[in-house]
Amino acid sequence: MPIVSVASSLVEGRRRSGPPLAGIEEVPWYDLPGRVETWFTGWDSGRAGTLATPAAIRRDERLLGITAACPGKPLTVSVVASTPMDADGLAALVPFAGGLVGTTRCGRPPLDEPADVLVWDVGSLTADALGWLGILAANRLQVSIILVESFPRGDSVRAALEAGAKAVLGKPLSVEALMGTLHRLKPVADGLGEERVHC
Image (cartoon, rainbow, N blue to C red; front, side, top):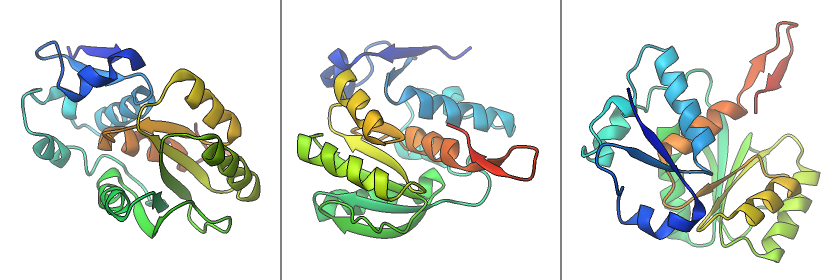
């Protein structure tokens, strides 16, 4: 039986230096919904998933076991980050998470963002970024916004969600968390021939 430890924001620095308990997957609290979605989606499709993979295995080898675990038509994802390197890194990760990269930009996202999903690496969630998030969410109701923040805290995550973000993920960005978050944002049939987003 896999054992997962849920870590608080206070152990952020320790998480970057590696898991403290051998064989136990440590997941930061803000990544847990996306990671659980990925695990359950994999199990539902008959895959053992990464929780059945030894914790000591290399991360790139673990990716091979989850890249096909996000079924259905891929969502078009726009990527925005503060630097070209961060934007390129996010854009390279999106296909592994089951998304289709639309546009890649630096700076802040425009108000006419055309994608299904916007992944915005804000670095640190400042008041300016939070204000722009609120304007963007109000102007593009059909675009689901995922924020990537360096050190998510309870107050900043709550403020982002209240401003219109669908999720806040941390750095280093887990492909499992991003994959599960994208899967949660996919429209699903509600039995009446209509589609809705299951969040």
